[in-house]
Image (tube, rainbow, N blue to C red; front, side):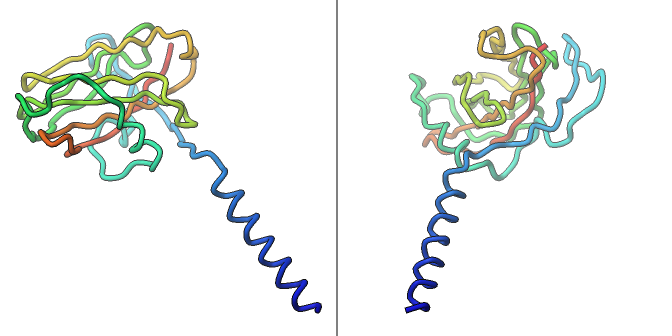
Amino acid sequence: MKIARLLIFCLSFLEWSCQSQSDTPETIAISGITQRNQFGNLVGTADNDDWITESSWPTLVSSQFNFSDTLNYAVNNEIGTINTIFAYPNPATTQFMFGISSSKPTIMKYILVDNQLNVLLQGTFRLKNSNFIVAIDFSDPKLVTGKTYRLYYAFYDKNKAIYAKGHGDIEKK
């Protein structure tokens, strides 16, 4: 009888332990920014894991890129080499520019999240030439002054498959 109670207790504890881990919200550590002025020039520290292509994202981030848009992915959309990615100014007040250099025309989607992975902004752009600058509105009242946010971005091929992705951090000034 004691063994049965001990077994029930252990199984109950194990079930509770697994549930408490899966109920914990996913978070990210936003460590710093790459400081750039209004012309895009580096003016301070650089965060080496920002504005590069990367192979993995948190699971929740990948699922957030399923939002719909109205672009035709089959036209003027090729797999290119992403050469340069940066955002300026950083920190930013009401908007920031997102500069991309790609070897071919492509489509880019982005989401802006806080450290708890709440999506605050999202968008899609068709990049028509090799050097492209996108202005992203940063004036939304839900964006708090003094807080740093993460911009995840992905580049898509004709079949709506991601061929390059990455992230960078932006501080609201």
